[in-house]
Length: 509
Image (tube, rainbow, N blue to C red; front, side, top):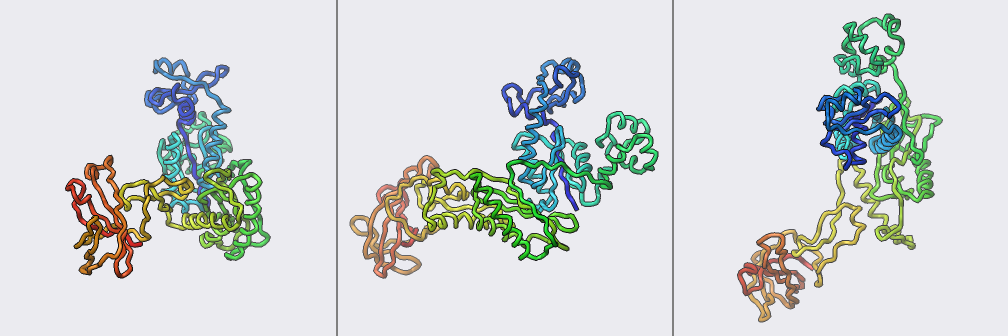
């Protein structure tokens, strides 16, 4: 069963103006958009501040100015609005490969088979709202079995989101007003005068009198909303998007057959990426089953890649998530997100094949980890500047590992094994130069044959008051049994303010 998401941007034109010209149109002032001069000057859009002041789309501009003296006005630019809405529709490709326009202020997305990629339908809608909010847009969302029902539900709830379970769009629409349907205002007014105030009351009437009195358009809108009739979405097809489709002679249902189809499509897609000098960042693979339902898998890469074996392996790892049912009769491979692959200081060009393989192996491992179900983040440990050795590593994302790490002041060798927490030891004898000669660890005495040091580290006084004046003296020691250890003393051994003078074991060479 299909699942269609409808998005309504009630303040689309005013939000676009405020984002483009924030100095001229501040968000705390009432702002309206009106039709061009040669048309009747009526309001076509209002922002939330103007809405709270009592202004509504369709009002004459002169009336709006009389009601709100400090009103900001902007003339509507239809071409720019349409282009901006198309760009936003193209951005929606991260959600599913089938976005569509609902002009002048809405979008559709066929999310059939995609909800599990985002943790379920509720989590998917929450993610869409969050990302649109980050882009500066207020939206209402609804998800149901039909585009018409989703549109009606989204436009009847300002700044809200709702998920209608499969097959229950009729119950969700029953109490909504007839004016929520995409019908002419005159028709909605006539229905209201007749006492037909809800869609449920309208659907309960005989069809023949309705068609005779209001025409077939009213019944068509009602049937589309209730799921009795389907209207295909006008899916936006971007010219620069790489998409390969194949219709299979016979339905396939085995993992081996699906892998064979993937092996036939991926090299062609990678060749197209190489010709453009781009690398894939997100790949969608859609399987259309014989019952017209869609099974979708989506994989991503940690950096732009057009490497055929790497993308093949990522897609094959996800084959187990495809449920072929009675068979798959058509497939589509889409590069839904790509980026240029430019050689630079962060992306060196390697001429030796062995060096290339060594460079791509970590990226392939990161890709496989990221695309595993349940994995939300993959990080690596990178060196960073810090006074104490236990703080000299930080968690960074794989993309940041391409950047050179911060220079450190480690002039002395560091142990191969560094303890998370230093272990307290008791030094029972010192040499005249302050080096440890004998220490006790876990009731066992160790005699030191050689020692090198001290390496003095100073605390980061700008962080906390406790580290102001803190000193550690590190010694590399070798015991008579051959153990090479890393010991340090808190303080300089002469001043109490520099440390307690206790000894600790922090690593093993």
